[in-house]
Each structure stands twice: as C-alpha cells, then as structure tokens.
Image 1 (cartoon, helix red, strand yellow):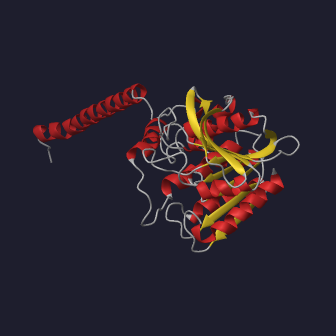
Image 2 (tube, rainbow, N blue to C red):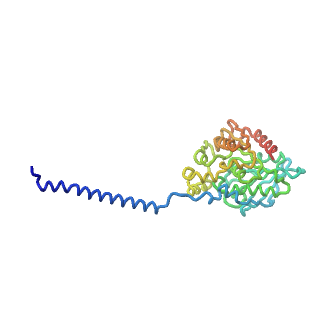
Length: 347
C-alpha cells in the first residue's frame, strides 16, 4: 500500500516541531534559572548585625568602666531607728542619678560597714518617688547594720536621662553598677563586703550585674525577671491584675528585635545579651524568693534560674512561697529575715 506523500511529510515533520518546542522550553528554563541566580546575587540575605555591636551584650558591658562618684547630699531625711537617711546623687554615664542612702548609726566595724545596692522593681517613672515604696524592705537591711543605697535609675524621680526599661537597654544596669562603685568609694563602707538585692525588674539588674562585676559578693533576688530571653519573649504569662506596661517601657525591646531579629531568627544574639548564658561567671552566692500566686512574674522564671545555677555549679538557695504574691506580702517578715541572714553570712 502506498503511503500518500502529504501524510508521510506530516509524520516526518512532527518530531522536528517537537524538538523545536523542547529547545524553546529549555531555553526559557535556562533564562529563568539565570534570572533567579542573578536575583539571588543582588538581593541581600536576611542577616543581622553581630551581637558585639550591641551595648547590651555581656561582653560589651564587661568592657566598659563603671567609676561611680562621690555622693552629693541633696536632702537629709528623718533618721530611722538606728540609721541615718539621706537623698543623695551620684554620676552614671554623665547623668546625675538620685538615690536613697542609709547609714547605720554608731561606730562601724573594722574596715567599714557592709553595703547593699538596693534595686527596685518596675514603677511607672511618672509616679516614682525616691522616698516612697520599698521603705519597709530597705528599713529591714538598714536596721540590721548594712549601708543601703536604692538607686532611682535614670529618668526616675529627679534623676537625669530617659527611662527606657531594664530588659532591653543597658542604662539601668549601668546605673546600679555605678551605684556599687560609688559605695566602694565611700569611706564608711567596706568595699570588700558589697552585695545586691533586687525585686522583679531589679532582680534582672542584680543577675546581670553579678555576671559583669566580680566585686559583688552576694545577691538576693525576689520575684525576679531572671529567665533567658527565649522564655521572656515566649513564656511571660501575666495573670489578671498585673500592671499594664506602657509602650515607652516596651519600645527598646521592639527596636532590638527589629534590628537583631527574634529569638527564633537570631538565637546567638539573645544568648550574647542574656546573663543566663554566663551563670558560670556569677560573682557570688545567690538567694532566690518567689511566690506561686505572683500575677506579674511566673514561677517558671524562678525555676529556670534555679536550673541554670545548678547546671553551672554555682551556690544558691531558693524559696518558693505557696499562694504568695509578687511582693511576698504574706511571708514578708520571713523573707526579709532570710535575706538579712543570707547577707550576714556571705558579706
């Protein structure tokens, strides 16, 4: 049977057309790949600045100096039972920082009085007053024979500077480290017997200070915000009745995450700025106190620091008060007595 010429031509022509189409498709794919490669080369990757560029990093804070200054008396207050009270100021980062200073009456022991830097928790800066809040707490240590100094932090009370919070900015830590240096300069103080007490945000400042400054011999932390940043950012559950934290206090954290990424995006950065990554360097023993009904700070933060200190082989004592609140109001006398006894044993 003879195959018509037109049909035979069609059979022969089909493979050629298919080959041309395949070639065209391959050319288009190659061009797409080249375009994608060029785009990848010109589009910057999602990279973040190194942690060393942040003044909040532990390494950066260790590299700084904290000279403090002599105290300037701003106001003499009515004396306590066995101690004097004065509103003083000292220098930090070129700022004048206010503080409440107590000094025991009588003759100091050989070498001078032991001293405690007293780090208060978050109080809205616009309502903060040097002589209000924490009076009973500070009084307990003052009556027990310790010099105490409660820093106002920058932007609080009459202190100069901006109040930007204590978790994402080095300013408040700088202020309490300069407070410690100022106490060491005071001739009434034994510079070798210096401790820190901190509540809530002040607990975070205490822990951070103790991995930076080796001269802090012991620390006591009540209801401290002392967890790694991963837990702070993803596990900070606050109960009904907790204080509303304004944007001004959260702004630095928002800015820091925008620049360096979140914990998930850039875990190396958050490890570099977290004191929990440096617990092996804690300067002395720590005593921890936490209430289980705390509306502000979950007990998980307390447990996280416990586990970290244990893993680092550092000495600590931990107390948990069932059903107690952020201020340990139901166990206040017990917690204060334990804290005083701890400082007496370790300073």
